[in-house]
Length: 459
Ligand code: ZN
Image (cartoon, rainbow, N blue to C red; front, side):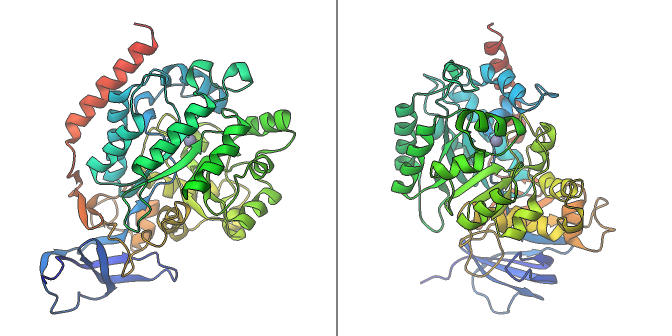
């Protein structure tokens, strides 16, 4: 039997982000097929068979591919709007536009979002998609197809909203689904697209949007559905003081107690934001293994506050990083979240136990893999894991004078990506996407954004 084709990467610094934080100043990675075969110091072992590609990575840092744990792809078409609003006002301003999306818009927005992240070293993406206008077409299938065409590993969190304004919720009635419709469509999406295998490129999660846009019944039955199907659960939680107030007024308890009562704490749940958490909330997350998607740029953009990430980590809560939707984080890439996670944590009351650059890299790789339930397969450079890795160029003007490559990567300007592999397959080469024409995509996203703006304006 012919040997598996190998790619050999040598002469680079390596941050493996394994459990011991192993790093090499000059090392090698051997990729065999879709797996990492070996990682270590010095050049690759001699005598390897069927080496189809040998890369001299002098001047580079190799890391695991970045893992994004919270995003809303459709927002790619509504960036730069409501730029001075806080969360609830921002949502109310944007819901009417979002409710006009259709399949071609969602396809363009998904490709734009995925391309921007891939260019910046993301190898595992996620999309929390919760807007499903009547007659909009097969939006879940469209998003999954976009991720497949770009070659990015992907979790679609099939979102939903069923609590319109007339029932006491925040979104307008025309933007929500029925309870039964949302549950049936979510189950169908799992049946069609969820792959539970080790090397899965597509997974599905059950993801009602937030306490102020979904009914208690949808939360409860959504949790039951996820556990019956063996998939993960995702939602927004404890993002703002307004959400806290909404929960106390409507349910007589804060968001974490409400989630506990509806089946939404557990090792199969991860929640976006978790800014307003007291010690009791943090202990509940730690006790149940509930994960957190930390989104520092979005939290700052919407004035939500500073998440207590050092306290969450100290308690043992799984934490990853999230871009969040690009209507509240126009940059749309994860690298700045590493940097902002460090900077923002030092502005809060946590300065003496603030995040380090290495901890931020861990959050963006291993932490994210854990939050998505994929730590067995991705998140670190170790033999036997899937070959999702990035070669960052560190010898240009932007980084060359910084001796520590991890500090350069996290604290410096976004580093150029020379190579990004997903499952051993290149998705970025010399800073360019291999699977999509960036200029054509820029034109398509612009025209679809304009079409959406015209529709929303009633033209
Ligand atoms: Zn979000």
